[in-house]
Image (cartoon, rainbow, N blue to C red; front, side):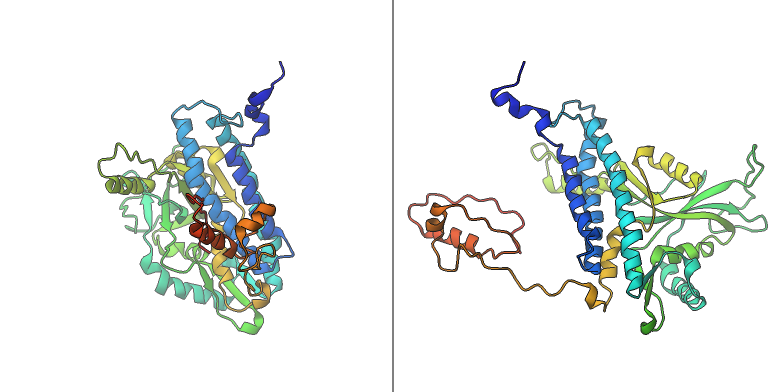
Length: 405
C-alpha cells in the first residue's frame, strides 16, 4: 500500500542519521585542509580542527550511543537505524576518515612544508649529529625529571591511562647481567616453555603535557626550520628510563574514554557534587577508541586491547603522529607569513539593510538573507532594538547560538 499524507514524513528514506551527518560535516572541514587554494598554514589549522572535532564527537556522541548499546536499547532512530547499527557505521566511516586525514598530512601538507623550508622530523634516525646531541641534552635536562615510567607485572597492576593523554608503550626484556633495575625485579626473568626466551614486560610512560610537544631544533635560519615532536625525543631515550632492560620495541598510543555526562537533576541531592562525581568518572570511563602507531608490535597491541577491553574495530592504526591537534603549534611558529591568510578586513555591510533603516519595513517587502560572520551582525541588533521600542511588540523570542563574535 502506498504511503500517503503525514505518514510519508516518517519514511526513513527521507532522513540521514544525525551522527553520520556530523561525520560528513567534519569531511567539509577536511576538504578545506585539502584545498590547495587555501594558504598552507591555514590548511594545517583545518586539519587540526578535524582532529579536535573528532575527539569531542567520540567522547560525547559516540560514547552516548555506546551506552545505548550496552543497555540493550533496540529502538530505531528516525533514519531507521538501531544504536548498534549506528555504532557499526560510525566506526567504519571513522576508519576511512582517519586514513583520509593522514593521507592529507603525509602527501600534501608535510611535503608542502618541506618545500617552504619547514621540516617535521618524524624519527630520531633522521637527525644530524648535532641535532642528536641537542635532543639528548634536552631529554636529560628538561624531559627526564618530569617523566613517570610505569611497568606492569605480577605485582604491579595496569596503570590508569588518562583520557586523551599521549603515551609511549614499550616491550622490555631484562638484561641477563643486570642487577635490580628501575622496575624493581631482583631475580632473572622466567623463560617461556615454548620459546625458551626471556619473558617480556610491558611498560608505559605518559608524554608530559607541561612541555611543548613541538620542539625546534638548532640550526641556521637560512637553512630552514626543523622541528621534532616530544614523543620522538622520549622514544629515542627510552633506554635511559629502563637501565637494566633491553627496549625491544616502543610505540606511541592514545585512548579515548567515554566522557558523556549523565546527571539526573531531579534525583541528585547535590547537583554540584553529582557533577564533580561524574567528572571524576570520566578519567576511568569505558575506552571507546585506541589509537596506536601503524606497524606497532603485535605483543604491545594485544596487551593494550586486553587491558583496556577494546575490540579490534575500535583500534585505529595511525600512519603518522598521533593527535593532529599539534598542528596548531606548528601554525604558531614565527615567520612564514606568506603561508598564512592575510588580515581579516572585517565584516561587510548588508546592502538590503543599511544603518538607520527600518527593519520591519524592509522585511515586509521580502526576506533578507544574511551570511555570518562574513556580514555584520548589526542588522540583527537593530532588529531587536527596534522591536524593544515598538509598543505593538508583545514579546521578543530568539535562539542565540555562537553569536558572541
